[in-house]
Length: 454
Image 1 (cartoon, helix red, strand yellow):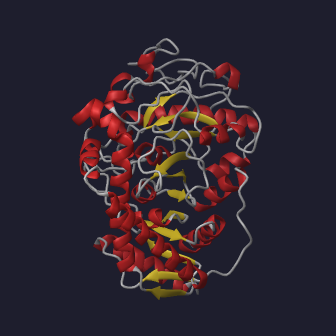
Image 2 (cartoon, rainbow, N blue to C red):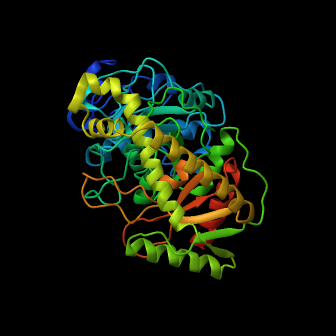
Image 3 (cartoon, rainbow, N blue to C red):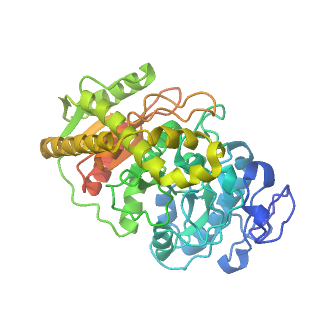
């Protein structure tokens, strides 16, 4: 494949394909991907021109860059995708959309998880039965990003229906391992430097866990803060959008660029579970080392006894997901049956859960929310592992959600940042605060990442 291929050419088995061809919406591993013909409109200068593409690493780099550097940086992202994605397989379709040319994120590319509707671009829900489906509308989050000038670069791989059946995506840190799920492609695309940011979605642990596995930062705002309009549901009382970036400072910059407030600086009262939730030895060591490093930096971290409640909340979140997911997808199951893969089992099992058990579970979650409100009043930020351990070997299992599901059920904001690892695979530190305190979580993450990196 020629290195001087420009944005205006479609890649399909190494040769141009007609722009807008339905085949171009199919997955990159077998059928190539589409680079839509908007190079002229964007003013991108390719390798055949007089200037080489700019290499912008982080979102902070992009925000500081001039409009011209951003235009050249877009081509650099496309070149990187072309060079790496045949191995990583993070993308369903690459089809850069026109930028409004104005706004805080003008000209900055991003990826979108493929359960999010996108007009004129592949929206296949990660499911073979929807292969070739093209979206007819833009989800609210896509419209919001567009209003700030960001360029949707394309759609990223997801587990089927954002549940269990894994996509072909590989972890950029170790291609023999999963990147996590269900926001597999979004995490991998950012970790591989293909885009400075990407959108994911979480029902139990679908964004925080992949961030931990891939060594990037992932932020899940308070439940309901970002509109889910246009996002395929799994469990409506749990589903929450979120973002991937390289670091906490990037995430704060994104949050501010979208018009949300980061708040004022403050002294944090930190807490961590004691006893620690059950995790792998590698995670236990990394987490304890991170806490030790923070304490040496004079960060006060007090023990809190919540491990038992977190374990019960993880189970409760799964019950809610099965109950709500089964009822939302019941009609789809009647039409497609076992062709839904793992989702078919969720529907069958979820339909067996009686309404009384579901309502009892919801009451339990509500009681935990009240307890956590009281705890957050005295311990403003809580630190926990972001995953049970490092990314599992192989692609058949996207990892355990136990470390993330409790915070999703509680509806509180949570962020995962990479912990210092002398050797081995990435591991994340999870930071949470009370519902509505999104800015506090971000400020704490920026502060802690700075201390851990010192």
